[in-house]
Image (cartoon, rainbow, N blue to C red; front, side, top):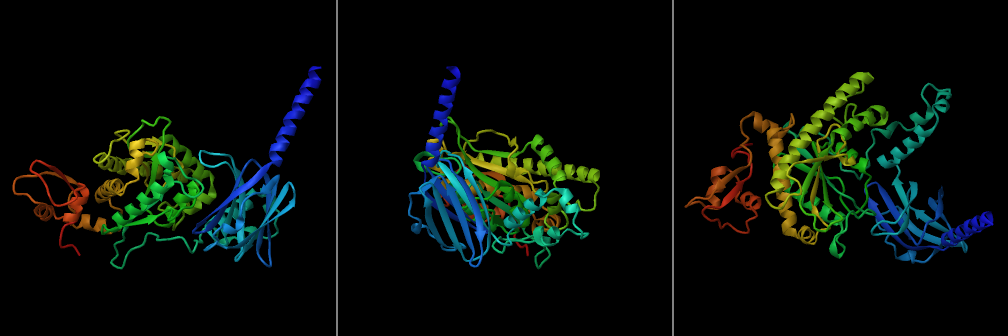
Length: 491
């Protein structure tokens, strides 16, 4: 009897699961275009199985979704600026759906399913990687590396054909990716490059705030404002890692920063907490444990080491044996982490002038985007989007601009003290033309904003920005923050 009952119970579970599986529907489709790939997301009512294959002459992608019915209008999808020229669907039978993507160019497809999160249900994700892009080349290389070594060794040619056919894998760059490798300007003094990473994006909305406010939108808005602020500082240039609403894998973000020639990586976020009362901004650097594990990973991964050989990084490990490479990489990681903590504290101190802090010191954690061994990296949590008051502030232009001014001031201060060799800021410092760092001035009788600007050799605009002043009115006894400046008369 017990066996029969167990058998019947198991059968009921199987039949129920089968009914749920068969009942899945494709209820919507969304699309994002990134500089080197296109992402399609199909919203599902439940889990499905699927397969993807390509056809040529003409180029097409075929997606078979088992256990699904189409319950959305595909014709409303906007395909402009994507390699997709059309999207068709056919119900092969009541339980199986076939989707066909007509393409204007050859792409490399990659697909996977996602379980529900706080905003979306079950999803089928299909990424179309542009041919020749870094993402496509990485995907091809991953497949090549998955081939057993014995198979490669058996090849008759001294250089395996698979490797020869993939010669550009380490060096090519997507034509849509802004690549500004560190190089001297016409005067021989280059800009300091700051890579700005707007957290989340595309299918990943990040944390959600009251009224449906999404972290991905707040971080991109702040990153864009921060780029404008940094670009206005002579000797500095900012590059956006994510320029629009699309998803970038975490490790890919640091790779983009490296190709942009970044001297500093700043990732912008807006945290959430189970308690809506949690508040305050914070700054993170990589933890010691995260640095140790990342050093080991880089040493073990030849493809990652190749990124640091002669061109896209500051550390050349190409001609070093494993032990020496390990020592050099560990030293590089230690120096990078020290710089990250230094710039992080300067940024945190400046943010603390305009908004409450969650912690008074730079925190350390193993965030993936902080794990570059050759680029100082910080993650700025601008506030808790889950807190109603902070969420409201984060969604205002005035507060975003105040955050931008404080972050830019901290970054500027750090590099004026520690300018990379060969930069315009290093030349100013070496020639004695660089003024001291940020100062504070207590307003005295007879002071005016214009006179203080002349005294400290800064612009009235920078004084207003540093102190969030709406006009030139100042009061006796008022404490003004005087931003760091470069002395007048410089070439």
